[in-house]
Length: 158
Image (cartoon, rainbow, N blue to C red; front, side):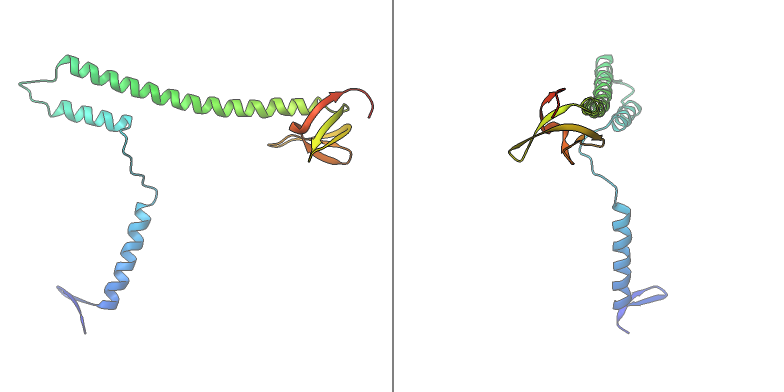
């Protein structure tokens, strides 16, 4: 048998190959979801600061100015992260508000006569229904049109 010898164990080349494939698959599965970061987050900054304090030379301790400077940097980093999260939430809230306002505007067209631009044509008719969803639509003359396609609104008859 041609193989590699390990004390009390001999594996054939085929078994070695199967083992290598299995090992590669396990390593790939373990490494999934791990993201290499080139930035320092607040936890890494705190660990670094604590390590620095724990390993400083007792005869030459860190000066107050350095310590205060590093704490100010940490505080600034934390505030920037909080602002970033806040802006993300604000953006989501504004998007939701925009859909709500657009939906209310479409509902206000019920029973009104509108002119709609569709493929270069102008369609005039009474709004019979309104549909919700990501894109508000109005039902005019037997078909749905996007709310954004409305170019004029009146209360007069069609």
